[in-house]
Image (cartoon, rainbow, N blue to C red):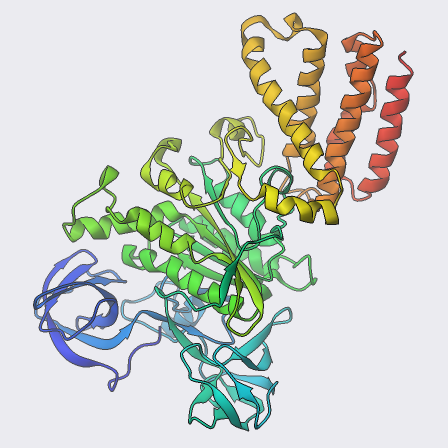
Length: 586
């Protein structure tokens, strides 16, 4: 949010007390969620409680050396984001201050308190191409023109949702700044490329629909076993070091969303640095252009002020909704919602609110619900369709999934990718536990996979699930008596399950080819393993010893399908070889 001008600011109050990021003020004329500027340095804050003449404010910056008696200035407006061309390829902090602009202002990577800048460049000009003409009727949300924001994305300039709309009186075109009028309406309203929207208020839509299309991630275990829909919600809980951030990085790089919003919420600075350094160098697989040309990063690392962490997820989802209104599919990665919840807990304790479970505020579940409910597949007010998919990482202390943030998240989201420290220690990545994870989108997405990948996608997937379930049961026996004590058919099942784990569920994020696996390849790898299974059990039924079946030369080649560029030809040859070698045993 841009700094308020003198004319915006009104009704001075005075600081009464300071407790970390929580400041109380007296004699301040303000409403709930209004933005205020605190102290002599003008630190940005937000009103979170009003009781009589006492106004409680959470400040988005460090409050050391702020003392009672200093002024507080109200703006009369809630925390809002600047929306318009220039948000993509940008890196913001939790309240949408552009970090690169602030670095230039300060001539340093270390920012002073009280510095501010608009969320988008108000002076930069953009080539506006109108799509309406004088006399046309426009309604709230209608597209009036297009700006080429980046090489990959056209920014659609819309009538703000809170406008009345009406007949177009005059249209402007050419190079214009975001605050210049591009369309004048007969009602007197003037449409610019710049909008503002309160972050805690969802942008309006006509209808929320049932999603029917998967958000293809290129990760075999996700697309194959636990898919998420475009407009769906997912949680990635896992202990330290199990791969939450890497999984989200993979999704940000490869998911087939038009726009990616990555919110680094309270994570370590070195992880966010890695994202900021890596993303500009990545090539978008869809366009061949830089991936940052369709990405917006919001960085609120663990050493940044705690209060801004509480607002950064709202900033991210409001930007996501804005691009959704243009008809785009947006994927929002929140890493991690646990740090967001911890920020709420700290603010709540300073407000002396009654604590809930493990000290979290009693409204934890409600806040999580409000956030995830803003995801969905929508029919927009302008008639277009767009989606916001939300994927939130959860960092349960000690990997305890029974803690409040994980449990409340599970009650809301429909996809659960449970990361497992034991798998990570065994170097099995992605370390997603296939026995604990689930997706409630599978049935509604199966028709898409049947139409676009293979008719027998659901049956083949169910076969894999059954084999992995049987392996899980057999492992308990193996640990007691050893594998050799099992009947031969069960030994063969364990061998097939091993190939499922190593060739299908495992994936190398650092390999140029294996890092992304399209659904057709995901299906084909599984089909090749099933071919081995069917032919192996035929040979076993014909009396061939299990040791001979397991020792054929072709079987280990299953583990190499993932790294093959010419995988179709490789699979054809491999399946023929498996059939020939196993058929030759009897």
